[in-house]
Length: 389
Image 1 (cartoon, rainbow, N blue to C red):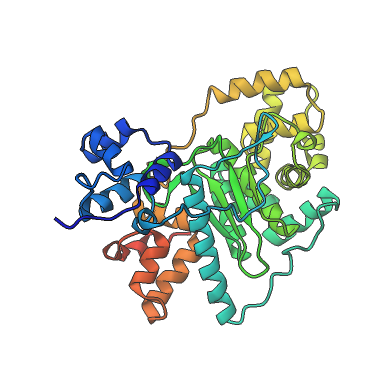
Image 2: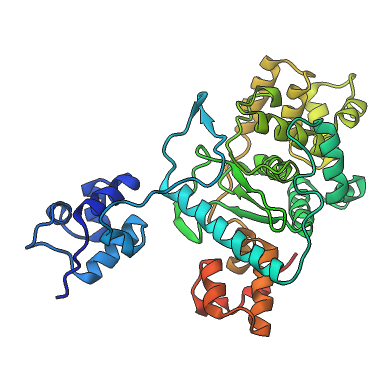
């Protein structure tokens, strides 16, 4: 048996990183608890085999090479962290979130290098405004660039269809949109919406936004536009908005602005007021406005509250009522159960189609494409069929 001379304290570090107990890890690997403890204590009579070291790295979701390091690597978050829970910053990001963030950066950097090689110019709208500018002015520019108008709304049958159309229009501006509720394609590593709803990677060539698809369906359309607003003001950031607060009550100035911009983009204040029917009750108005603007009742309710058109008590009552009618999106069934269609959603239609085109002309290798899409090379066959925009 070939022994793996892994570093004992790295086993302990990896276990703490993923909140693994001896019992859970032993069960996962089908070994005794005593053996896990022996690996932590460098028991020379109980060193893992090389195959066991591979199994250990897979179970702990860390690269095999990490287990041979003398000291743990520094896992920094390369984005401004705007998240809070109960007004306190989140101190320790989960391995699932870190892996998702690094994977998004890997995709964004590849696409940037590709575009630079193609001689693509900088985006005119990226960093066009400052964080102190008027949200309505920014929103008007976003609506123009995204082609968001009444015709687009009328062409969408409902808010879910409108979300798909919005994603397509955002990607047509050259912003990559990734929507995923798991790490890569691993359905056993679900992303926690309590940790983050989305993030934006600002770049003047190839910006990227990520939407946590584990969130309520009704929240994702708002998160999408919120993250896109980050690109307009040239600010990367990780978001975990508290949707029970108004725009002006969000904890960070960037989130306050982007929240206000998103609300104005999706439901312009003047149009909302003009469509409001004072003769009808609030349920009727919310339903009417949701159908008119092609957004969810959740977005309308929150917009009404942000604009002080309803009281906090009414908002809280209707908010709780709406939550009982919806469920978080299923990570396993997102995209209608079609894996190849789901793959394009998780990795961005633009990035996926670029990789597939590169495979066809030989500019992208199968290994490179499969690594960026987080699939095996054999699974590349059929991906093109999922490219339905």
